[in-house]
Length: 306
Image (cartoon, rainbow, N blue to C red; front, side, top):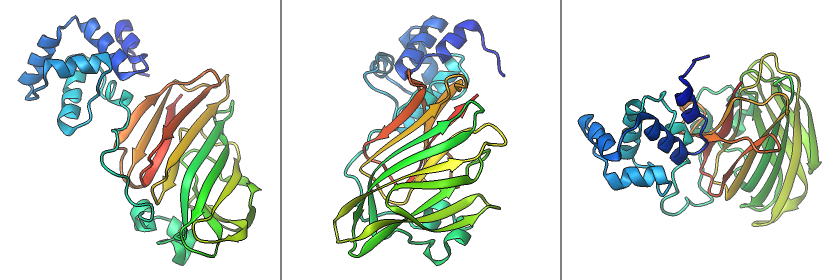
C-alpha cells in the first residue's frame, strides 16, 4: 500500500471534488493566481474565475481543455494521478437523449470475439429487440468474506413490437466472482437457461406470463445468487444495449468488511477502458449508489478497493 504524507492523506479523504481541491490548494499554500501561472507555464490557459468556481463547487471540469488542466493541476498540487479526477461526476447530458428505439448490437457492446456469442448463438446481434428497458433498479450484496453473493434486479420493460412474452437476461461473471448457484424469479417465471462455465457467462429467458401488445409495460424481478468467491470481489457492472430512462445501481457491504474506497464508472463497450470514474461515499447502511436519470448504452458499474 502506498503511504502518503499525513496532510496529503487528509486531501485524499475528501468526498467531493471542490472539498479536495480547496484542501489541496490550502496544503500547498498557493494563490489561485500562482496556480494559473503554473498552468500557463505547462501550456494550459485557465481563468482565475474558472479556478475559483471549481474550488467553490459552482462548476466542474468537463471539456477536454479543462480535463487537461485538471491533470496538470494534480501534478502542481503534488497529488497522485486521478486524486481529483476520480471525484468528478459524469458530464451533464448535452442535447436530446437518442431515440429510445436506437441502441447497439451485441458485437458493438460486447466485442466481436466475446465468448457470450457462443452462449447466445444466432440471437447475439439483436437479442431483446422487441423490448425496451425503461428503468432498472439493481442491488448487489457483498458479504463478510468479501464475496459478491446476491444481485437483486428489477426491470420495468415496454414492448416496442407486439407479441412480446419474454426477456433475455445475460450475466457475465466478473473477475474473482463465482458462477450463480440459483436464479430466483419473483415477478415472471424462469424459462430456458444457457450456461458457459468455462467463460463465465449465462443467459436465461424470463417469461412475463402473458403476451404484451405494443407499448404495454411489465415488470421483471429476479435474484441472482452466487457462491463464495475464490478471491475478494472487486467490481460489479450492468451492460445496456439501449438507452434507459433511469437506472439505480447499489452495492451493499457487510458492516465488518467495508471497502477502503468505492467508485462508479462508465465504458461505452465491454472491451473499452473507463471514460468516466467518480468517487462514491458509503452511507450509514453500508451502501453506495449511483442514480442515472438518462442512461446511455454501454457499461455502467462499481469498483471498490479493499
